[in-house]
Length: 227
Image (cartoon, rainbow, N blue to C red; front, side):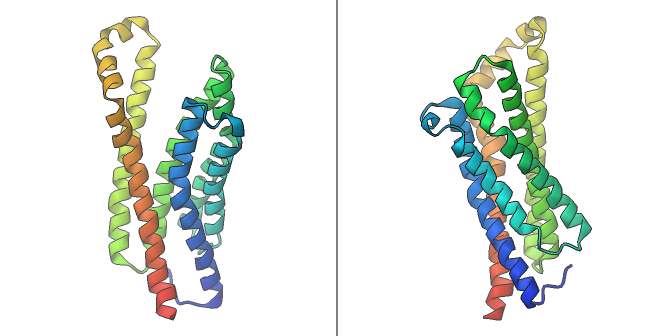
């Protein structure tokens, strides 16, 4: 476990870490809402590519704020780098959400949107790993236990979601196979809201809770102790 004695240099890095965690906490639901609406509705069309770019950029900014914390910890920095790389990919692909909503018949834009979805799910899974690595360095046993448990649940939910989506995409390529699963497709179409809640909203909500708890632990144990 890292030494968190509040030296001036460490306090500055912890301050940036807290700002980064706050950006991620607020950026996650905003990015999910804005990016989903950019594809489905026209109420953001007047702003063009700006909303998805800003929200995905906020996530990337939060991760950049965190990189100055404990740079000598290789496991932590490697995990943070992977998450930051995926956030950069999300930022680069986010304009295609708007462009595809304007030209839905363009296969190139559709491929970019699908890549954004895959990258977004991968980002959320990687972010959970990063939170787990961060929790392991903080002097709070309860936080370490909670991050291990909930990040594991989140990653499994995301993996199951990708497996289900991959299964339906695979059988959708064959009309014969698709015909055999008509009832399954109808059931999924009827209860898709529960699918979204279980495999997307639930991991996002638990990730936000872990981000908030981690930030509170830092503020209480380090900055609170100094006061």
